[in-house]
Image 1 (spheres, rainbow, N blue to C red):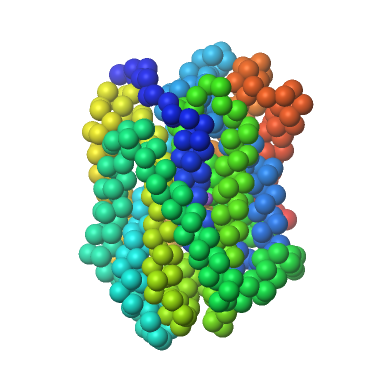
Image 2 (cartoon, protein in one colour):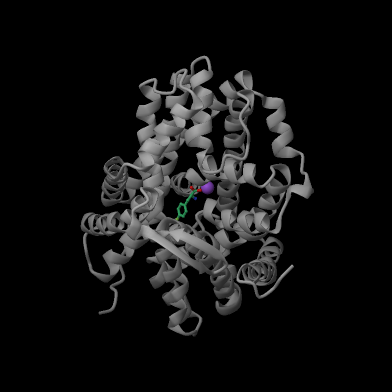
Length: 460
Ligand code: PFF
Ligand code: NA
């Protein structure tokens, strides 16, 4: 059975696209993950490497993805297939699209669980559970959540159902509406919390920590993490940017929009650091807390502070908004594919996708509860994995995203006809050359180098 060509419709404006794509980019990656991986990898020097990855790899690849989407106007695999046919190349290049759809799906299977923690913390914070609680008490609130399958399943289900409803309602009534409410609300809340942190926390130490590079603290694995995170935070190689590009009006400049989205994502990650670390440092806590930073350290600090209940609640509402606008992006490419391939209605496709996702999310839920059947014990592409969550997280962030980005760069810069690429980009010849050469040489070599190192072929 082959796919039918479906007219999926388009964003109502350039702004709608930018809001949706920024909504996809800005998420748990910015507010939960970036601050803690920065803390674990020494601060300033890591931030610098990360910024270089965004500039030299992330932005060029995002332009390539949006281009594929807009020229193909279908779900990622069918868009790449159409462009391969246009270029007279093998249709198996559609694997480039498939890699993204699969990665997006796998990421959402754990992302929905963590988004569920954020939603449940709105109620924890709001009920005053952190007020004057000891660090041990706050740690046990988090551990109780992680070890309680019922709670985890309820919150994960909530996240997936709401995601399915939004996506099922369609581009304008669902996605556009959700991002036009959630994104401004998220930004206002983030700025309020950053202002609160600047006045009530240790801002000076935070600035020093984030912006004074100490290269003795940077390890090679820190560079790997920065690269993987550049892909993750910009929603690259996950189907999202390709499918959002597929709805982009023809006259919108891809380059300008992509640069705006990348800058917004980067600024919000930095502001998140500036909002979280003053509170953490100001209360005598350390930077190297790992995944617990937002769910344990921050609540400990909120519990000690003036207005901590209100600002703590607002913080988790903000985190919830950020997570939802990313979740809808991750499921959209699979939904578009189901509409093309199975000729489902959007609502039916969304329901089918989130039910399947729900089943996969159980692998992560039971990894956290420590169920025996979810435990693993083997080495996989350079890392020892201990449960399914570990496996899926590593497989996506460190393997599928870099490989997908590499494949995208190769497809656009080496397989597509340069004239077709130039026509679609519709930008000045000079800037086009800078981008095209970066995508053709720098991006693949840099990604390949880092990846070969991961699997132990190249050692430095
Ligand atoms: N960019 C999102 C974040 O930083 O949280 C995560 C993400 C969204 C990854 C959408 C992939 C994706 F397709
Ligand atoms: Na992000």
